[in-house]
Length: 302
Length: 302
Image (tube, rainbow over all chains, first blue to last red; front, side):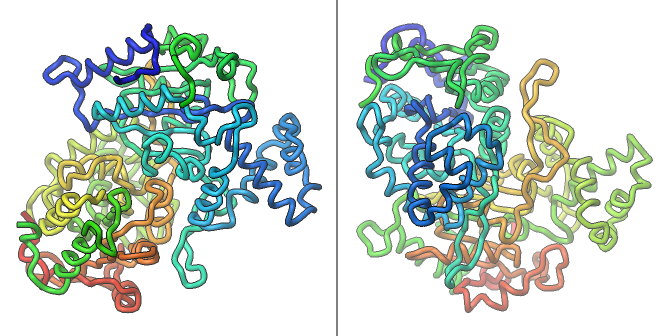
């Protein structure tokens, strides 16, 4: 049965009703296949982002590995703050510190080398609270929803602040979302012939930080269509949800509220790394359907 | 019959043989569906780019329209050079002049407004030599090839120096290539609420000039897979072809040579706007299959 991990309630009803309307042949709100675009945030929407985003766990492990080879790195403020998980100090270091870390951990190698590094990390890295592999910290109701949408002719995309290459290393296996349907933050790529082989090198310069107003801009660049459905969980997703709702005809915007301390985490506006306040406060104004993890989901993980 | 507008010869045989090898179930060179990515340049590869690219005809018509409303524009060097089709002067104006023209003609409006402008132009703008609508100046053998590849499980992409939004306004109808599979040069997009409606504005700042080494970089960003097949017609496509050929396993790179003055145009290294010299001279070294318009194509247009 479709959406079997969703409890019957307003959220599930809104989804099923919406999909029925846009797919009904000859119906007043029928939407052709080509325009059935659904965009999902990743961190906190498709998988767990607490106590810190998976990307940051990866960053810490990569920084540890690099500092093991070159101990002088530990003296650099951004590395020290990261290794000590002092996020106050890390944020105080500002953009320059963040870029230094990204350049050291996510660049200076080819796309293929990064992919191998990421896959190897995903094969063993585990969540500190749940003890399961990070790639198994995806939400089962959402994986069902992605499949349900695809069964109804939707193309499903990730539009996330996470690094595009890290997501591409697991999204196909975890969500059934192909690499070309993953949009994220990115470092610039440079084509070069290295050791006689033409390849793409990741260079230490930010290409795009895919958050807030940049999300709809990247949807325009990569997809070129206004989505029919958007699903997020933080203020970083509000622009994407509003862009979606701003189109003509039927549109659905969904906001996951983490209110389930028992089974996962309960948080919203106090989570510094990705707060939820405006999107929650204005959900009614913007016709955004709030999904309660506690009430709407029968189970969280597989 | 597939590829009926292609003459039997080395080029057609190379294509058919390649597709047979990568699609043969259980074959040594079988490639799964997800990796069957084919990238095509547009100008001069999928449609006519002479005497100047269609994008430049569009630019001239847009500039005329704007100058009709504001005659002082004619006094600006870049506008004057464009309106007089003095491409020497236009190129001498350099990047700043080009950006001024792009900002005036391709920006300051929403994505949807630009789309409407482009569609309206395509509905009536005609090629000066052939008298047919520009959107009917596509090459029939290539439209057949795109369909043949899709029938064999390939995803077909455009990767062109042309503006992404102009191409998206006709690519689905002309080539069967969906908007999200069109990669091109782009102006930056900015999300804003205008007249109460959330939308994407095209702003007067270059996002990406999708030519030469930038083509493989954009393939990495948008698709995240190394193509299996690349088709181009100029030195601007050489990096994309070399990136394609640099992957493991079977890969095919094709180069269209315009050597047909009778039916279309004959040109290569002397075409200033997009020369073909290095890719032709080094085709053997790089294992690039040269396609002769004169010998390999039975017909050019529909």
